[in-house]
Length: 396
Image (cartoon, rainbow, N blue to C red; front, side):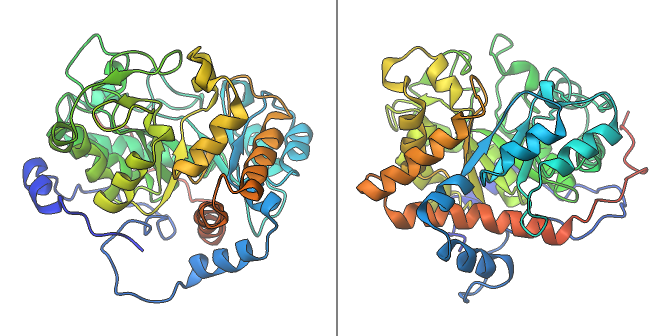
């Protein structure tokens, strides 16, 4: 159940995020609902109850497989289908997975589903601009949207969400909730605002627009803008205090959570005044996301291969990184860089072994598997295939 946020009134007043009008679209019930107003205490029902029952019937090995999102670089549907038979909870499409046409993409994403009653989470990084995988994404980039009214962000991300969903993709790792005014920052060209309030308005608009079509994701928690450096090759760090973070970098994430984001991606970022470990491996930062910000959706790591790419000896073992990530509070571990057909299997086996040894409490893995499974069931119930959105034209 969603925890009550202690900063809601203060930060809401600071941000002043309003309801952004969206295009009228012919779409099914939104996936949002994992992070709304806290309901009265009741027993789980619907996808949540079904997920609990399903996970209770899984072996430890099956639970571990369900919390891994894998990747292999191919456009061969048969190879992808074979890869997914190992029971993985999801797959991320990178550039090497995107064929020339939309019908080919639809055939590819269909092949990723082994059990239609429990489809995997099929994800993509579709931010637009410098990070775009799909050929037909002509919608404005974050750099453009940051200079336009929030309504433009609503239109762009409704169109982008519709485009993603048409290809059979169900999760978009596409909403940058980082904020920075530093033009030299690694993340500068991808942020939706250069200050907390403007970023928050556009993050909320992007989230509510996309959730009509796909499960949207906020990244890179707790905020890349405050930590200089590129997390693909290092562990960017900052000495920003928790109090400073609450007043600045937290604000767009809170706006996105309140707008109904289904997933929250943790970055490999060290806020040393809070925890010396990267946030992706920090139990303290997961506690903040759950108990202070009230996020109760799926928490996913950024690519664990990036930790290895940092060159830091403590992060040289991908299996150890996956075990630490699940133990810290992540629900889904993501593997891309250096991933082979065997990598996901190795990560899952390592997580299961850690449960058997007591390094990860059994209830922690079950909780992670339940959250991921519930989102998969919710997607199965709401996405026969999203209707196209001809009204979602790029705003100018």
